[in-house]
Amino acid sequence: MEHFVVQEFVPPEVYEKTGEASIQLINPAMTAFIQAIREDLGKPITINNWHKGGPFKYRGFRPEGCGVGAGHSAHLSGKALDFDVEGSSADTIREYLVANKNKYQMITRLEDAVNWVHADCLPIGNLSRIHIFAP
Image (tube, rainbow, N blue to C red):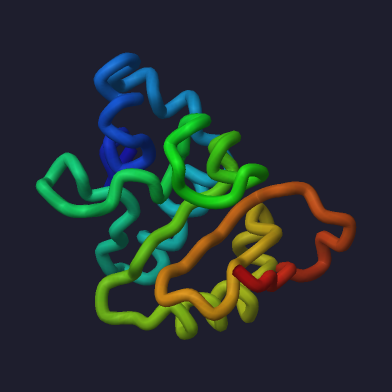
């Protein structure tokens, strides 16, 4: 995958057990999305950075019992990513995604009022728009 490595999608304990095969825990719609937005914006994106000594390790797939997020989180099924885009605010990226819904049809939901971007592909009833939800 251009621009990303598997460690950016899974925490260290998962990567240690399954290595490169860990990518199978991420819904293909999410890897396609993050690759597309990275190419379209032309800016680096940070999901997990634990493998580079950074603090983020649960912004992609979250294993049961990790203690992060809601008990019904889309992260538990590999259908959500939290990320930052270098040089852009989370609000700016959310606005961009909503304005370009047709280009990123795999994204169904965005979390509002957080300083990172949470995008997921959980099924919702109305696919003509992106649902914005509160944390």
